[in-house]
Image (cartoon, rainbow over all chains, first blue to last red; front, side, top):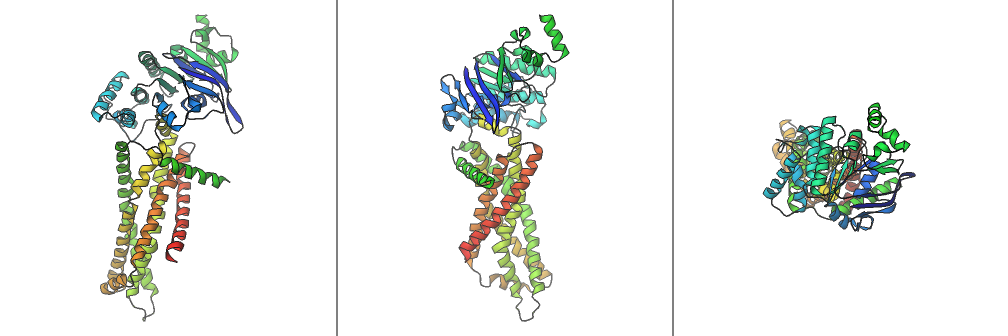
Length: 251
Length: 245
């Protein structure tokens, strides 16, 4: 579980996050949604400790991120997995090497054991015949799967995903969303996903936080988002005619 | 003020580079890969430039020795002095700032742009050590390149001089051996070691702290080349002042 209490973050004069509090529960897919520039990425990077917040606290179980030194943060980060927007795969390595990398860095296991575990992760994300391909030889959807496999190989307690289905076709997007949700339930991890994809919201949004201008404007589940009267949320979520019709039908 | 901020950040980067070390079995692979790219990959261009510039130095010297009273062995002497003292260590280092420096900046910069550095950080890896330390170690072999450059520079001068009809082989060889001060080679290698550190760290700094996209990677490489060259020239002056005067 991750507790976020009243965090603020500014860059120069601009206040990007303004007193955000939230709780991200274990075994749930937690979604952060909002328009571009609403502070989603800064919020996610603050959770990861890549940005230091100006005020407030971020607590991972009983460990307060803000009070940690670099060494303690490095240890905590070994409990985290991250899927970046552009996948952030190491382009000098093959798919298998990318997935093996975190274990090679942080365990004393021999390469054959690590390779076996990597192959289990590869199977889990349904990657076929890609082990020895370089990352620029595979499709966008496959890259996301590799990134997910790399993120889960160390059995993380926390999984963070930044726009996991950006640049993917709708069918692959849903497959990736479902994969993340299945992994969250299966491994009982705390998953936080940054997205502005409405399909993801409807499909896997067990807990949704809507950010606007650096403020938490709304919080609820994908069922509650249909019923909300919050204008900012409805303007954002139901901006397309299709979703407006879906909402009408639902209500 | 801005330059002071950069200098401060550069030294903090250096401190962090020698901070928490990456696992040896990973580091070893990175060092070997960097030796292959930065050192072995540079031998070809350094050999080519050294051979022909050595030849040009010899021809220019020969053409300027119009006075018949001046001995022909001065061509070999001047070529040796030029190549060992300045051309090989300094001129080649400036060329390497373009070749190796821009490679380092663009490779680290691309990793920054594509969030690969963020990915390493999220894994709890000391990214400074992981990215920069192997480059410092592999470039510590840089004096070997300068050794090759010195040899080929003088050899190029010999070929140009003897086969161009400017002096005899015996005169040139006598010139090379004339008034030889072994410390001059030591001075050249001391300079080279400093330059190798500069070649590894300044381009790394520009790549590591770059922001933006693909266009900015190109800009960072250019800025890195300019600053690496400027620092090499300044350090060259300081070391010369300290060691040769």
